[in-house]
Image 1 (cartoon, rainbow, N blue to C red):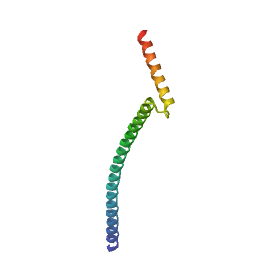
Image 2: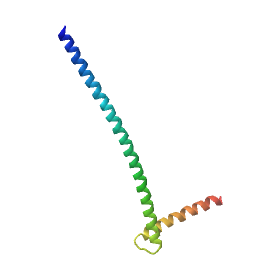
Image 3: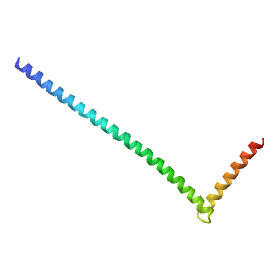
Image 4: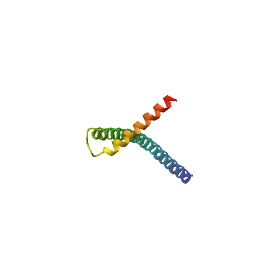
Length: 96
């Protein structure tokens, strides 16, 4: 009978250790999931910041071209022509 009790005690100990390990892993997983969510939010914010800076850079390039800078002259002319076409299209639609 003593052997069976020893085996049962051993199994209980092993099950207890496994359950404890599982609880620790659940907590670790929850912590990592939370950190992942935080990092994803930071990534989204950084992408928005990058988009904002790109837009500001493009605006600055156009302003420099309008002020006489020769570097981005072609791009500015293309942008102005596109705006003029859009305005002409709007005027045509209003005339109808």
